[in-house]
Length: 362
Ligand SMILES: O=C(O)C(=O)C[C@]1(C(=O)O)C=C[C@@H](O)C=C1
Image (tube, rainbow, N blue to C red; front, side, top):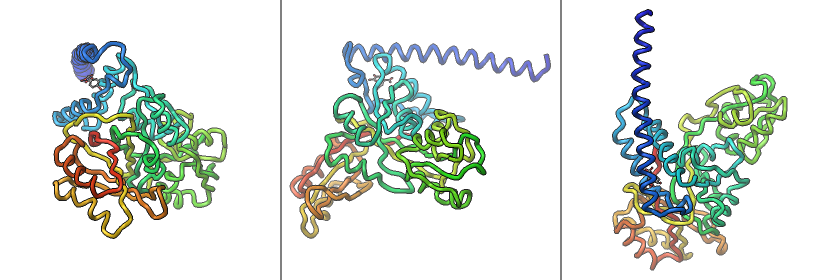
């Protein structure tokens, strides 16, 4: 045996020994998680075993301990999967998302809940809210913002009429591909994609497919499904959608901005305790008089609460009335935020806490 082959087999033996230890430890961890589940009660619905604040804490410790060579995101992904399997020993969580299979929303579900959760593909963002409200899904995952394109207004507007609570946020790097049956750019006469994706890839399309007709469809996965049945068509979608629908990749990373990221919200029916690094989302409506918004927001500064974002939408309660979606740092149980909300209650027409949830992990 050559020296190289000998050292290869030695390292593989070491890896085998490490794998044995990892496997024993994973099994041991799963037994402990089962013990915890027993304390919570036997035969409960899956959602009663789920503790997002504890999961966020566990994953932050993973990030703090990480010294490479794997990235923080990779380490988080691996531990997320272990926790997902530990939780699913009771029952898998059921999570609704904007389908069909292969969408970025499905990727976001797995990033946040792991692959042991059961993803339920639904027809629209509205349907995700409905299925969560009706209890047919434990949670829902909906896109709310893209780093290049801004807010997804359908999602914001759903909070005006639904009682959904925000239980988490997910940030997903979105890598777009051009996909087709043949995998040849010269065959493409037509491009199917979600309107947002067409926007995200505008420059690439102008340079590489200036003549092709562009058709906006309901999702990237729907685009992939259509491209499968059309010889001269391509779809813009994620690589996963390409695999699900059996398409070849013509080009990868065709998004105009290299940091293209979509933020998703996890919606549910209840609030969860603090995780130690949380964000709170509020829905505020103000009376239509000069300085009203300024007055309503002043308690944040007074109580040292930092505001991360403010978005306004027509309130649907009357002409020229606006609802403000506001994100602040901290959890609703934190005393400074409680004091600010108490003061705001007297100044605003309405203050609703949409949710307090762990800040997105890598
Ligand atoms: O700590 C708990 O409450 C557990 O149930 C254990 C555990 C885990 O695997 O670490 C599993 C599921 C919960 O969502 C949170 C954490």
